Amino acid sequence: MYPDRVLSGMRPTGRLHLGHYHGALKNWAKLQHEHPCFFFVADWHALTTHYEDPSVIENNVYEMVVDWIAAGVDPAQATLFIQSRVPQHAELTLFLSLITPISWLERVPTYKDMQENLADRDLATHGFMGYPVMQAADILIYRANLVPVGEDQSSHVEITREIARRFNHLFGREPGFEEKAKAAIKKLGSKKAKKYEEYRTAYQQQGDEAGLEAARELLNDTQNLAMGDRERLFGYLEGSGKMILPEPQALLTETPKLVGLDGRKMSKSYNNTIALRDDAETVSKKIRTMPTDPQRVRRTDPGDPEKCPVWPMHLVYSDQDTRDWVVSGCKSAGIGCLECKQPVIDAVNAELKPIQERAAPFEEDPTLVRNILADGCEKAQAIAEETMRDVRDAMGLAYS
Ligand code: TRP
Ligand code: SF4
Image 1: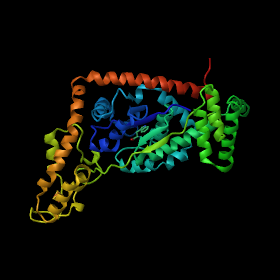
Image 2: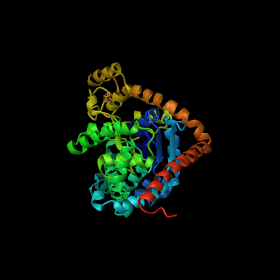
Image 3: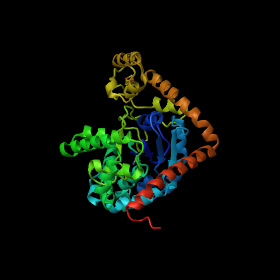
């Protein structure tokens, strides 16, 4: 019913690294060719955990977007913007918070996890607890159908769906909804109206998902319906009322095979990253000083790649021949660790070279990225405001 739209966001918490590249940005760059995409800097989100040191956020917003573009996200294809420049996000967050039960928020797995992981911060705040509500607003305000995120974020997309459903259920009920829906069915013409009724009955009485899908397709193929009638017919299918905020799907990104320099997940807080804008010298130094199989103390000691954090890097960056060379050379002490690391160093630097070349003009002229964001914020605002008009209307706030 609403246009196809991808939305995702990232917190501005520091220079991006290979983990972000393999875990998110490569995927964003691919998606931008397949759907209209909206990517935003989640600066308010960063404040839910880092409210005590806002400077960290401020300094990182523009640099992060330079990293996105350097990684291949194309501002001519995708809309890039900053959450706080679209204040409608705050308005929708407030409305959704009115209808979100606290028990839903307590149940979100990241709620307790993050409080434990960030034990040095006081996260017993209203804002932190409500952060999934803000994320729901981020998504629903663009009526995005697809949300590319890692596994760690899937519970947030799930609660977004629940909040949308509750919103539609509460506010999609206009007076006389049934009658209006029935009148809208007539407007489909007798053939389509009959099909629609059949599909709807199959879905509502037998839970036939294919019927639901077919009915949606039928509505999508019907051009000459007024917007209000479309919403009613989509809503009537599931029986709830008008569908004001559609439920999004998570597009789960595979967990990247790439790990950090010490074999743990690559993360700034572990200090084990290779940043996208690390120069060749730095990359070489970081990899050369990586720990290896602890059994391989001397050059003459045989080792085991399975026990070495360099090995996962070979799995990402090396071809089969190189891997065979690593396995036999390591197990027989035929190669030294520095020798073994060299192909990884070369491959990482080869991957980073075009990224850094794309970043260069943006590093030289900071107005470039500011202009891109100004354009993106304007586009995002227009869409957000359109949704908010429907939302205010549904909530009885459209006084004139
Ligand atoms: N919470 C996400 C993270 O920490 C960032 C985010 C905020 C987001 N709003 C979003 C991601 C909306 C997808 C959609 O990574
Ligand atoms: Fe690791 Fe390679 Fe050294 Fe083996 S030879 S321990 S795989 S760095």
